[in-house]
Every structure is written in structure tokens, then in C-alpha cells.
Length: 403
Ligand SMILES: [Zn+2]
Image (cartoon, rainbow, N blue to C red; front, side, top):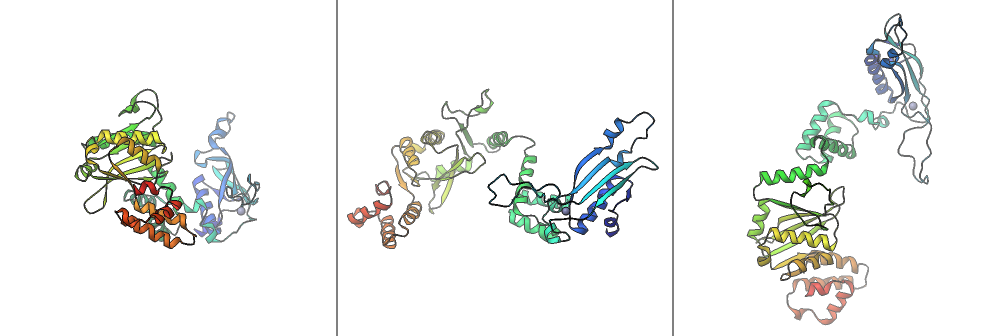
């Protein structure tokens, strides 16, 4: 390795491009620097323009001319921003280190380092702690890549994968690198399909593999129909409802109380995920359906709930109570679609929002205690008028909760 590193010097010859690259890599690792190819004239282009009688260059030389600059070469580019943060997108620091290569046909086919400016400037040299953060030094070998893929398949956490790679290879990968690799892996798994096409296939696969499951892709402006994507005009997807057979069984078994909870911005289209849950006999939530919403507007939410009810027609007669968080659109949507159910606010949400609102107030702890007592009571007697008024002052939706 050391001999190879020393061969990267002026007037040194190489029998092939590969031999040069191996020596350069050894030099880079030894000196903790990185070079990148900045200009080239490939052998095939050079050969194509030769006059008859001139000797062609061997293809294994790859380059007629080539220049390699230190990765920190090139002018310092002024940041386009207000200059409040250092330039983060480029490594260019005006380092003059440079290697020039030339391919020769006579007296024998070989590559020559015609000039080598080996002095670096404006960045650390010989510092392995610094150098390990260069992209080139973070690249993983084939075996490690396979290991990472296996860990992706096992749903390994990014932090664990980072730890594993650092332990086995000493490379300074971070979770962002792993996240990029995961995206790449997913893209390969989709075989070039867009995530949207892949989603449709996945939903169709669900129907096939899980008889009794169902899904609806909803478009609010038009009629909602299944498998609409094969029609000619692309339409905006407003919601996607899906339900496996197990979810339907949950609903059939525990139909009295439903809960709705929404997580926001779950995918790159910033769709929200509404989870429909039933409460079982141990007070645990059991998922009975998932709804992805493009936006949480009243009409989209209402249409999605309508589809949920249409696909589970028993719901109209069996559901007695629906628990929601404090979202008005959700409440009015549920009231419209299921006019006969009790709409309850989720106690956890009420408490959380209440304590946020009274934070810093003089009587915050007293007020919180009153609210907690009110949550646990189911009779009007333990809510003295004064308390109720105090509570509504801070929690705008108490009237709904009290009803
Ligand atoms: Zn340099």
C-alpha cells in the first residue's frame, strides 16, 4: 500500500488507468486528502480523430489527458444567502493541489503523471479524523452494502445500522447517509415505478392476498369509485380509505365505540393519516380502518367518513359513541354522517390542551384539578357553575365536551 502511495508522483508511469487509480487511492488514504477528476479527454475520442498512420492509444489507458484537482480546489464561491451561515454546499477552498495525466502510445502504451502540484492549502492535510467525513471515504464496500440491505429488510432502525457499520468498518456514516441508502433501496424495490403506481399495486395486492379487505380512492369533486385510476383522466386523490379483513373483524366484534385520531404530514405529499379505532373490552384501541387525507377540509373529511360508513353499513346502527380530538371539522363531519351517535372529546386531548392554555396562569394547578375532576364525573352535580365558567374561559370547546 505504501509503495503504491509513493508512486503518485511526477513522471511516474502506469500500464493502465486502473493501476493509476489504485495508486492514487492509496495516496489519498495515506495523506488523508481526496482528488476528483475535473477535466478529461477520453481515449476513444482521441483515437477517433487520429490521422491514418498514427498509433492509437490502448483502451485500458482510458485517458489521453486528464486533470485531477484536490476536492478543495476551485474558487471559493460566495454564498447566495445573507452570509449568516458558512457556505455549506461546496468544499471549494482554492486549494492548488493538482495532478495532470497524459496517455502515451510510444515507446509503449502507458499513462504518465506529467505534473503533480502536491502542496495543499486552506484545509487540513494528514488528519484522518477530518478525512473520514469525505463522501468518498464513507462509501461502503459490497459486503457491507449487502448487510445494510438485509437490515433494511428486517426493518432495522437507522441508528442501529449506523452503529453496526461504524463497529465493523470504522466508516463515519451517519443516519442521513443511511436514510439516503434506504430511499435508494426502496426505489430499486419498486423497479422504477413511481410511489403512486406502487401504492395502487400494493392496494390491489391486498385485495388479492387478503379476501375481505377493501379500499377506496376518493375524489371529492366527482363520484367516488374504486379502481378509478385506470380511467383516462388523472384526478386529484383526496383520500384513500383501506381496511383489511382483520380490521373489519375488529369492528364487527367491538362496534359500540369508535375513535378518530389524525397524524399530520405522513408522506411526501403532506397527506394526513386518520386512524379509525374501536375500543375493545379491555379499553384498548383496535384499528378498524385507515384513511389518508389530502387535506383536512370539511368536505374531504366528510366524504371519507361517508365512504367508511358505506363500506361498513352496520356502523350506522351499532356505533353509539365516537371519540374525537378537539377538531371542529371532525366533529361536524361525524355529526353529519352519523347523526345519532354521541360525539365525545378525547380526555387526553382535552387535558393536554387545557394545561397548555392555562400554563403560566396564577391558578393553573387549581384549574387543572377542576378539569380532571370534571373529566371523571358523569353527573352534573359535581360541576358547580363557577367552575364551568372558569373552565370554558380557557378551553374554548368545553361546551361540546360537557354535552
Ligand atoms: Zn487540497
